[in-house]
Amino acid sequence: LAKTTQPISMDSYEGQEVNITCSHNNIATNDYITWYQQFPSQGPRFIIQGYKTKVTNEVASLFIPADRKSSTLSLPRVSLSDTAVYYCLGANAGNMLTFGGGTRLMVKP
Amino acid sequence: NAGVTQTPKFQVLKTGQSMTLQCAQDMNHEYMSWYRQDPGMGLRLIHYSVGAGITDQGEVPNGYNVSRSTTEDFPLRLLSAAPSQTSVYFCASSIIAGGQETQYFGPGTRLLVL
Image 1 (cartoon, chains in turn red, orange):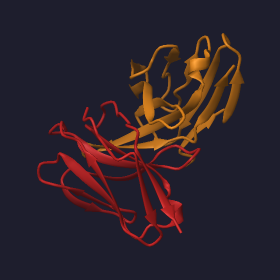
Image 2 (image 1 turned 90 degrees about the horizontal axis):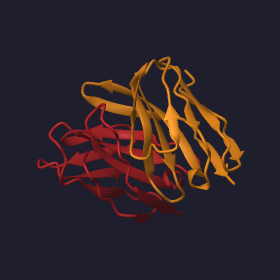
Image 3 (image 1 turned 60 degrees about the horizontal axis):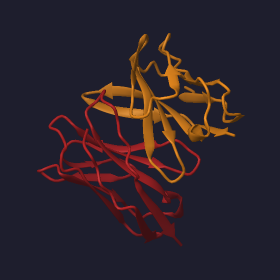
Image 4 (image 1 turned 180 degrees about the horizontal axis):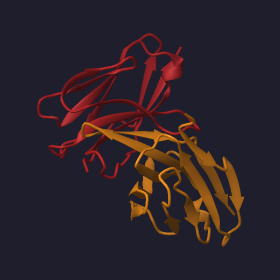
């Protein structure tokens, strides 16, 4: 299991782009990098997943450099409703997932 | 699809009582997991199952039992509740495709042990 390190918290303002970086120095060859979002009193929700380079969906983009020792979740033009905790995980499919403390994003008006 | 459902939503127990937290999914996922989340913390894996009849321990299994008699259901049993088990419990089911795994979480059960 890849041990991940993320900032504990981040602040942003509505309309800005937010980039959350996750460090995973011991990521294994078969591990994918996955990001989840969690709102208060709800279960985590899958956002995006990737192995290398760049992945984009309707919610976010995920940038993974060639050495795969880090990844960056990019949220374009955040709104107040993007205030949540964001978790970065590195694991191979079918293995136990370990959630760290996550990054608490606060979007201000 | 209802996705992942959990019952009850909230429960109060006295120390020493037992109870079962129910989890069901209608997506025909083979993998299911139970996590607990303490205030201000990330999720910690309690038990998981890779298919009907197969279960294994996660990071914090002590005080909890699980069984998986069907693909759909994955109940979590607290044998003798302790105040340290006060937490929010999340059940999840997973789909694996092309080597990638995506977990779908239920709404959670808030448990208070007095």
